[in-house]
Length: 282
Image (tube, rainbow, N blue to C red; front, side, top):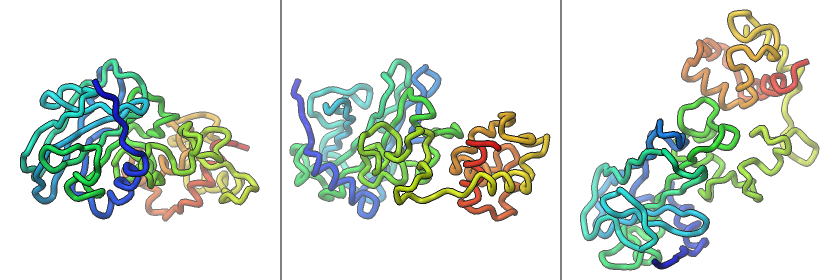
């Protein structure tokens, strides 16, 4: 078996042009997957126009690349294509595994088509050049505090385009771009609640808890049939409102009847104010 590493600079360059010029796209119905056997880890690739060559699919664990082989049933450290010298167009299922027993962690998936018989670790062989590299990011067996999938839809609540990456992860390394220590939280999120902390270091300040409390009452959240007089009751998952993105998602998708707030025209700043109040009820 041969160990191999794709130069980080090449990988970053390829991913940086992904959204504008990609020759294909990786799709899955879940990026956040349980590893208790109740859910599948599956992905397919969609080619909007025909592409010909050798198809490689790989994941990376602790810096080591593993390549998909054997008709999509297993990974190997050997550098082998999934299929060779074929034309690809439309959607193709790459793999569909049970999540059972997979070690908890982040698993990026990379897909590229190369010129037939050429080295996939040399980007000059990629069909479409750097734009030929496509990716998807799986979070397997991790807690909601890490995945940020508080609404349970299989994607982080700030992953609106559902590609497995945070929307502020422009370099697509699986972490927020301001998460330099790669612990899964923003570097200014000292209390590790998934939100930027309100401090005096030039960060965007959040509205006061007093404003949030007023909104909580005026919008009807305090009704006994909703969340109760204060968030301290924990009624109807009000604790999830510490993440404004979760509240917005509930409103947009009318979860628990929250769609009624869409008529109120509630702003992101107001949702943040409510989040501040829920975190610190007074």
